[in-house]
Image (cartoon, rainbow, N blue to C red; front, side, top):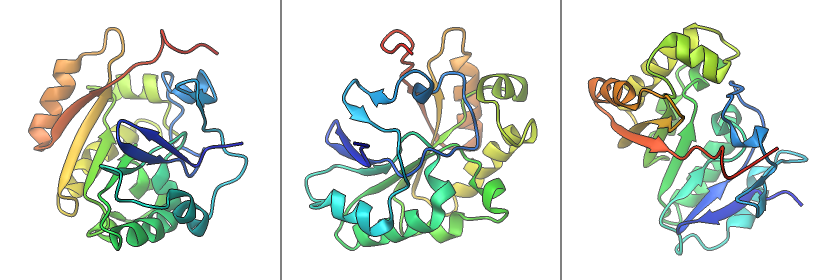
Length: 201
């Protein structure tokens, strides 16, 4: 049975879609459908807002509730807003992990719609330049995707209290160059775990 929620490190993660704007070469869903060997994150169907809220239950025991699974959560923007609103009413702290391409997907600036519903956001920068980004992430929007991610990060700062740019710690990744981009954008920086050695197809 698919997991629409899973717990890690005192946080609760919400897995609400398999769909994504990218097809990243390093993505864990290309290696296994059982994250950490425990959570089956490949969805047979996308859960409704009410189903997600019911599965979460008591929010008080979690440090953060995070929209992050095997797909891009902001593809399901309305669901994110409905669930986040219900959780905020219970006093939960909300984070969204995103590829930063939601404005392209929805053909509008969606960030104002998340103001007050989201405490923090981690945006996948994933590369120090457009060529590396296209090679690693295979974005459906092509080369213009990299600048779109940078623009999304800058725009997010206007509406989201805490914004972080992230990169996967791949071999040969120029982490320092990515960190410099984050600094220039005025956001925090984080290196995410690369799971190549831990998971196999």
